[in-house]
Image 1: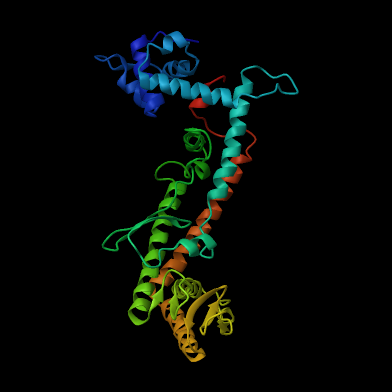
Image 2: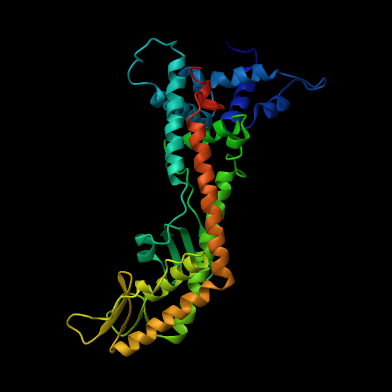
Length: 356
């Protein structure tokens, strides 16, 4: 059903809603029927006008601004992608088909999103390999986030947008709309810039920044007292793994993980075709020396460092924050699971208007 709102007014309403996500109530206030008397179009009238946009004919679309034309093509493309490729086994009303497909798309999107709500592991092999332990200036994309180190060694970390590249453009925003308008606080509080999901992402970035600050403290102390081979050179001295294992062990010990023990240290081993000895901690050599006696000195220092740092404020706060973020991630995944399993998907978004 159409409306008697003038074309130029509708075009401005579409810009506000489809390009700027302006709520219908705000749109009503900006387009009074009679400015002097303050009378407004009804909510239902404005809602119907907004719903007209996706079903406009090509001729009418060409009368709109380029931005609105591009938006119309995007919405139509989304609708076509979500239409069932085969007719349902049982006949259903024609208009129900696009919405059912849209609903299924949203449920799959929830599953993909939930799979990303996990705190990055400190034992990730890619993290250990790519950590800028020498803190050279640059931008590093790590499992813990995007790490930026400035020329004056300042550290900034931002965690990744967990909704990025989940699906076709704007679908993640549509899921956010369903959560916000669900009418259920457990779902609505996940959505938006101040929602639990976005707050979790921001907090993970802050947590990761604290991780890098601790790593730098350890690196600076070790560099001041010993020669460190940051690039896996086979020559006497400490390796990057000496610093990394102190860092991880200290955090684990600060969190009360008693399984961090001396069993990590392997017996000294000779390096083939050299007169050098190495001491492995885990799977990598943490130090290389010309004698076992020097390796023993390095091992004792490693043990002292990890226990001393475990009792300092920063590692303790990191361990506490890690547990808090893990608990919040569990809660968010549980809420998303409950949302997905609702018999009828709660809330609505602009795509729900198409075909429904």
